[in-house]
Figure 1 (cartoon, rainbow, N blue to C red):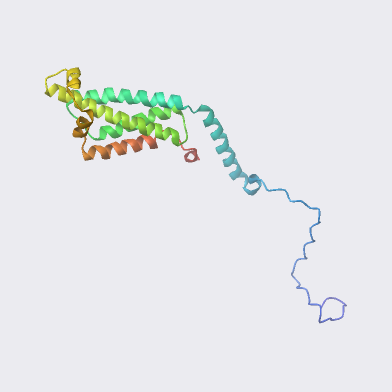
Figure 2 (cartoon, rainbow, N blue to C red):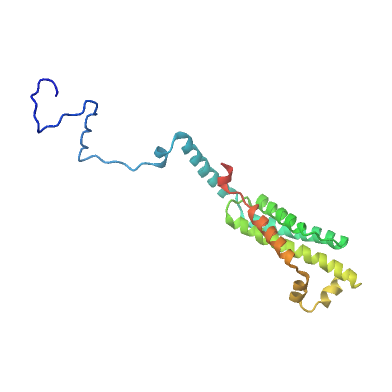
Length: 196
């Protein structure tokens, strides 16, 4: 019972601790859409702004032609250096393929400055090209030396390049080529989300 009012069983007693009912909204009120900065706390909105600024900066710096040139340049260099050394030493370790894939990926990342999958695909293709090229150059040097022929004469004596290449490949070679291709893909570009 409140104050001096008489008891009326048709009207329930309000709870003593209940807050007052909110006033009804006016008919002409318009609620504007809430922006993402109003939903996030101040520290979280700073991170979103940093990521957007980094995306804009990376888009200005990245270059697919430079990534292609860097990747193919590194691939040719790896073919000549790794294939030449392995051919002259008569020794090819399977881990050379992984090192070649990583070196090519670093070149694509350095020259391309990309942050999306396109640069990963460029790195993967260049790494696979470099591994196959270096491995076959090493075999060309070794087999031409065993046949006591110059390398150009040995190249002219090969009838079917496809059969020659498949005779050289082993099952373990395919595994290390796959790992090198993965390295070429994974390390060729920066994912922006990894920086934060």
